[in-house]
Image (spheres, rainbow over the protein chains, first blue to last red):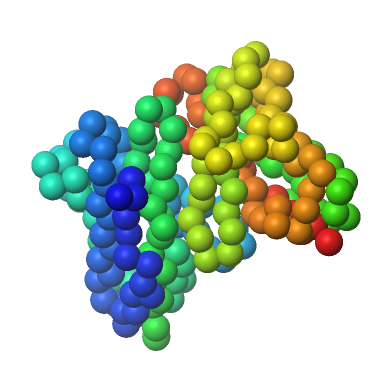
Length: 109
Length: 116
């Protein structure tokens, strides 16, 4: 079983819609969770971090964490074509980040 | 904010030669740096963790004699790909952890290595 799992996509949503990205992880002891956005040929950039159960909102982005279900999600409201990228879920495990395979998001006009 | 500078951004080398990639934390001290490799359409795979002044810890399956990591100071880590072969062509990305905050992972801009 992979440590961090994501649906590879692509996930296609129309402009203005809500994009929902999901991630599951295997290590129940994990405490820190991150969402990164990566454009093709570029390095990942941090969108959000979340450490406690529940929701965390930052602008158009909302991260949701459910430790009991070992599940992390990212919601993007009012999706824009510029949001088209690969979204990587990362889980901190023994002081290092383990990445999922990423979900490719396509926002069409 | 924390900034990590990685050089070069791209490099082309001949098969059998060695290539060095530098990763510098510009405005913070990085007690720990990480090196990742990313093949096309795949995720970031952690290669090794380096701590200042000590030997790097390599992930399973990563050849320590081929990928030499040096973390001689709190602001600089280097990755040397020795005797590079075409299969080593990849996107290499470093990450540094800000020891002050204890949380933040800042990524360099990556190095595209092409071995011909």
